[in-house]
Amino acid sequence: MNDLHFDIQIATAERPLVDVRDFRIPLDRITFLFGESGIGKSLIARAVYGLLDPGEFRVKIDGKPYESYLERPETKAIKETSFYVFQEPSSHLNPLLPLAVQLGEGSLAKVPDNSHVIEEMWEGTTKKEIDSLLEVYPKPYRPSGGEKQRIFLIMALKKIDLMLERRHDIHRCLFVFDEPTGSLDNHFRNVFLSLLFKRFQQFRFTTLLITHDYSMVSEVARSHSSIADQVAFKELGLHRGHLSLKDFQPETYLGWLNQQQGTIASTSSREPAKPLLRVESGAEVFGQRLTISKDQEGKHSSPLEIGPGSMVYLKAPSGTGKTTLVKMMMGLIRGNKLRLMLDGMTLTEKTPRRFWQKRIWGKEMTMVFQHADEALNPRSTVTETFLGLPSTKPISRGDIRQTLGELYDFEITDEFLNKEVSTLSGGQKQRLNLLRSMFLNTDILILDEPLNGLDFESVTKVLAMIEQKQRAGKGILLISHNEEIFDALIPSEQIYYLHARPATQ
Image (cartoon, rainbow, N blue to C red):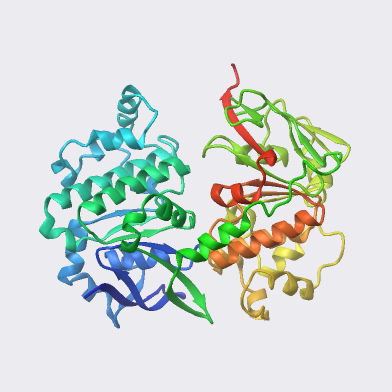
């Protein structure tokens, strides 16, 4: 047998959640699983691993009740020999035990000392600082999201090391990584992948890695070509209303990426135009001074300027404060020393909130939030999401249908228009989040992680829409961890860097 394959149905008492036939995981290979957010990837992985609660979900695997699947010897073997890295590690760390103890709990205590793995995953950090971190008892805001994620990845790597010592059991393993690098920058993502592939080269084991990061395709091709034939790329998607798994060909992404090089026009060769928006460097918030620069090291501060028809990319490591800065620019977060010029207006932290609401929101600037759930009212219908916008003209159902048709690949029926936002998948919410903001057609459009939770086809459509806005003369500010994509699209002179330093310095 070359694959694990299942027919899986998952539902709650209220509604069906997943119905997929012939879901396959190749044995003794590393499978990257792509697909839009909320479509069921995590639920399927948890079901296969044996983690779903039969009291909470109605589950059938291969037409039989989930309880019978849980009693299979191979299912019990998976739970004994394997490891599951959860998408949200915060809820799976014990607040009553320091991190160092949790790294050695249970079977992990049998693993020989591999402190070098910890040092590699915290490259650039001194041993003293690492030891201090490992003494921490997990709390909501400490360690950080990226640190918690690295702790779980180290646990998984330790479990792999343990199973490599017991090679006769390695074929019974299924290592699942659910969005394992979402809080890591590309460097540490690549460190993790190297550590994983190094172990895989010693002895093949079955791995399912769920991700929205299509640039992992490039990293495999660039840095791990020797085992590329042992790596499978799959995409889970809805096709004609049915959930199905299909092969994702690396060239689909690599060829497309190559075509994107420099497609966003540079503004440096054009006649200089008065900026639509100018944001001064040095705003202060939460005890940090946010410095903007054109150089990556941050040696020289610079105002961020967005001209007509320009697309600007703001880069910084995760947690630096990119989202915080743009929320300050939108008047949603208060800080100090904020100063921006917009359409002849000067805005500061002293500008009344009602002024932002009356003159700025949806009229001069619009922001696409990083998380769709932050922007959308879950109790509103799809139609009401548009009707509540501060549009300068009446909004008809025809306008809404036409707008939705730009990103949804199915007929926009009355039933869909009347759906509550809470019932949509994560990818459907993200499309709605994008479309409602673009509908307003403001001169400045701020996009915070606009590709979050989208499948590859939707990514290409969204990028085409963004480019269309740019060509129409709109000024666009982008924040995204999809560095490979936007580095290919946007000229270097239109890239800014954000640095956070203590405000007292």
